[in-house]
Image (cartoon, rainbow, N blue to C red; front, side, top):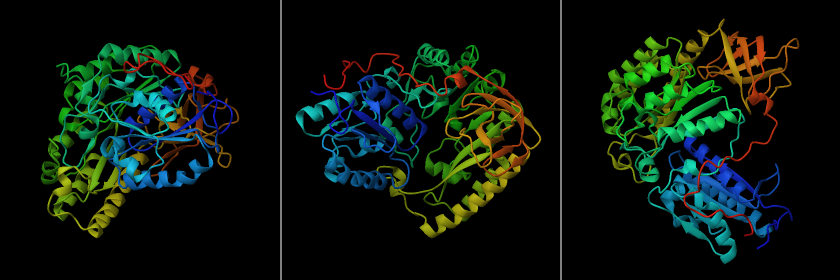
Length: 487
């Protein structure tokens, strides 16, 4: 079989389109790594890719419509480009499985959350047999971190500590699609982090559907706090973050590890979902308002400058006006630095979809707008407390591009607030991956401005900002043979 593209006559090209959570973003890095390891190359901007991969989400509203709408847009593109292939993976593929081909016959490959390592072989099989391939496993066989990975950033990386979830929240379909929690061994995680740091990475984010439940599979309730402390021993690792924890499993040893470990950032993203005890019970969230606010109080006692962010759902079945007012109360008490807010919508296959007392959309929208107004007032007040402070900002890719109109660059403070920094002609120009110290001079609900640049620290990550990022192959791919395009 030819190793060249029918579209360009060169190496076959790929594009991965990602929807949903950070876990999907990290999975897409693995999909890119797998394809490059098999001989594909990224498609040039504006060109048509030989392979388009959709890494889908089943949690976000209208996920189905977005996918099938995008697939329909590719029907004429594929007709004009013989040899083009389309693959659909991720949570929606795990949920819909074979029905994807019925709705979108132009799809060549469907694969699930448990077998992303199969993608190159499935693409080759579909080409060789000239027929669509569907492969969905019902459980994880090998942890996906054994797969090749192609990061988007030279200085920041995701590191999975676990996949799957043992919770049974009534609004969530993730456990059915990602499976029960499976934990990696601490040594494997730390080895991966060391490899990343050796490549110039300054910041890692530990990932898990319920990240602070890490260790439950091998019976160590303090495994996550031990992992955080171990990260503090890695030379060259400047920033450690994690997402997303569950209030049920948020223990005092984790708070102590956050406060006492030099490179764990003063930031906590902890989903609230609702401030009402009654709604939390119907959601099957195993904590109540007092427990949630108590955790935040302990975190701020140990780390006074910590920024706390959250997720909130409005309009869950049975939510009364009094329930909603309790959510507003927690927003004001918790003093969130940011909140990701969602209007409840039914997810087929979840218990909440069949609950009585579904809230009329007009009521959900009105409450949602009130929530946004409250959140913006709280976050602005919290951001105003930053004015006058000197902060160290890690200049970021994408956000870190120079804005010619304002002569600013952007990045993240230690507490993960977005900071737009004014350039100073008397100082070196920072690059993505470099660190700058700047004084906060202005606050808005969703960002900070720093008009006084104090210093610039060039880093190894900044040195590598314009260099191609290599594919990391930390282990054997799910027991599969290595396959390259055309073999």
